[in-house]
Amino acid sequence: MAQPKEIFVRLDRCMGCHSCELACAVEHSQSKSLYSAISEKPTPQSRVYVEWVAPDNRLPVLCRHCEDAPCMHACICGAISRTEERVVMTNADKCIGCWTCVMVCPYGVIGRHLEEHKAYRCDRCPDLEIPACVSSCPTKALVYQAVDEFSKDVRKVASSEMLSGEGG
Amino acid sequence: MANNEDRYVIIGASAAGMAAAEAIRQSDSTGVITVLSEEPVQPYFRPMIPFLISGKKSAADMTLIGQGPYSGTGIDVKLNSRAEGIDTKNQTVMVQGGDLVPYDKLLIATGSRPYIPPEIAGTEAEGVFALRTLTDASAAAGRAAEADHVVMLGGGLLNLKAAFALLERGLDVTLVVYSPEVLSQLMEPDDAVLIRDALNKAGLKIMTGCSATHILSQAGGVNGVLLDSGQEISCQMVCIGKGVFPNVNFLEQSDVQVDQGVVVDRFTACNAANVFAAGDVAVTFDPITSDKIVTGLWTNAVEMGRCAGYNMAGRTTEYTGTFGILNATQVADEPFVSMGIVHTSGTDYETHVFSTRNTYRKLVFSEDGERLVGVVFIGDISHAGLYRYVIRERMPVANIKTFIINHTLHYGHFLLL
Image 1 (cartoon, each protein chain N blue to C red):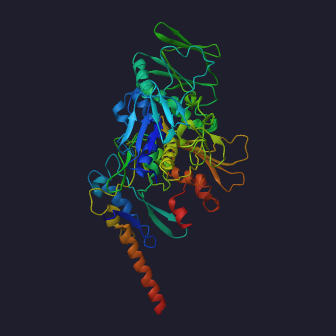
Image 2: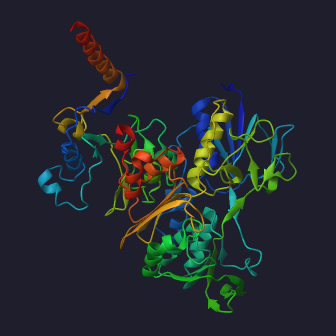
Image 3: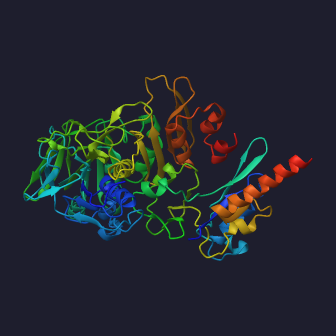
């Protein structure tokens, strides 16, 4: 069976432009258009967070859909489950807004939608072939690949760097 | 790995028991898993029962099997099957009615039951509830339909949630709290100011520093509560929320070691061979203080139950303990998180407190200031999980302390600092 794709972050590429946040919020709006999304209620929220670390590091943080997802086991109402695609999904209809998932997520990537009183997080854009954050990234800092493909690419880059280092 | 003939018996079909059943099924696809439940209904998410009182959810909305991570198959839940004793020599469980259920591996996950203070007279009257089960909540909802005024004894989270459910139904609710402030187990009085304001605004009447001595009743059940001050409050319903204690009575005749709760080692095993325990019934420990504790929290019970399940199925897994305080919730539109060590009066912990009109936070560090040991967030609880992680892993905080104190910590700090 082919490994499911995941969203990887290439830390050296993120410029901190926040395009991913915007694209994420728009994709999770009703209209899916930036112009109408701005005035929508409930306010569309981004599920990816571009953080900054001094002196000059940026990185997008988003749900890792953990293999051993603490949020899923901690949830006191059964609102969080794993889909066949291995995506950890919060069912907004079931969520009671107790924030236990927020308290146990070690990445801090579960948001609280205050207007709806529901928890939300990355759903890997089930309607899209490539998640909105990944397609919107101008520097390709976000990559949507299976683990084996991604690590193969990393190895390729590393070995070519080593080779070029040896040569000169 | 466990062989395919193994018979796993689990006593208790709530958080710890069902999480264990799920973990066993993950590790052993053919073992026979039997869960004995004393309740007459299929397993459900117990923390949701206040919604039955408010009427916001039905019992069907609280069903556990098939929801969240509970998708394992071949887990046989036997209802109305209270365990009355265990024989660890012959490896059997005695079930009400006299049946003997043999086991190869046994999990004690009988949870806890409400503490009813013996010094309060009249607690057996009709209309007095200690909310624990779905059955209790249904009965309370029925009584609430005919009541105008409810007195709640105890200012803990269970009672606050129930109080809100009753307020939502339009009833008058009075909370009688012995401590100087509500939620005294989860925070100090000064920490609770915002929550108290929100509770007052929501219309909850709160009386602190007093307790009930008598519950008064007549033919139709409860008609009042007499306080230690001599004051009498008329009401048609009383809810007692004075904490819980482990369900260990059925172990009296067995050789399983009990000290408040069932004593287990770091791998959730009891002193008797092939017997494990998890959840509210088990004595666990706080990883920060190493204190022995019994907790009454769904989230803790699930974590410990999963660990026990893996150990029962032969996947040796160490249980790493849990904070005695580990609560997140929202009362009266005020979200809060309280975890780790938060009671700091009269101690030498380094504490940092920040308060605004609508947020409050308290960060508690070790005496030398090098470790975070506890957190209270009220109003803004974002990224709370990161702080839990810092506490639990006993991370040295020198290079992230400013972010912790300012509540600006994010995952990038772990990765790039």
